Length: 255
Ligand code: ADP
Ligand code: MG
Image 1 (cartoon, rainbow, N blue to C red):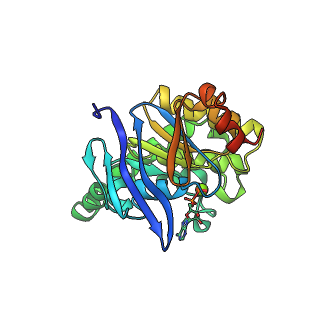
Image 2: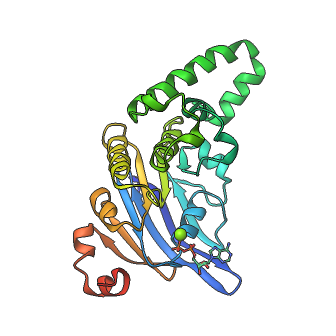
């Protein structure tokens, strides 16, 4: 029954002091989907992502990834299994080119490439060439060829977002978590970003789990959409249905 869920959150709770941020929450992200997660500020969305990505450990409940119990595994271990989340390009990488930024992410699973490097120094150059080839493929896929030698710090906000997305393509990701990836991106680049997420999904088979405030973007990209409030899932379905649920519209979209 649950074999097709990439991410399966079962009765997970997380409190911070007296506050229950995630409250007996259960949800699934199906393989091959672009699943949206929406809800008011403070609903527990980012906390749920932190739990799923291993940044924090649940007080109770279980998190399955590809059918295996990964509750309490470190972000590094989850990364090794193909669970990725985007991070803003760190300050220290802004003086590296777009291409170099991608090459900082190992093309193999992290543990393996380190081992190769240590055990067989002669293999480093070959591994480098392989990483470079993959980085160039990613640049090509994202149509960033014209800025590949630009310093990352000089890229526009939207181009940086594309580069962040590109970093997830340097490893064999099974699931990519995007937390408000569109914030502050202009309309044109937002379209590029959305198109690339769609292409990664349909052409390359990536599963996405997306927190986003831009409801048009959610409506365009995501099916299903999960609505969270006060740490719990209160609705789930296609955006067309969610939009027609008067209680949800009134409470969470303010119209
Ligand atoms: P959302 O992303 O939906 O806006 P969050 O998951 O960020 O919601 O927050 C859920 C609740 O948990 C909020 O009340 C927030 O203040 C609280 N919270 C989140 N992280 C922490 C933390 N590290 N320590 C204490 N409270 C936190
Ligand atoms: Mg948040």
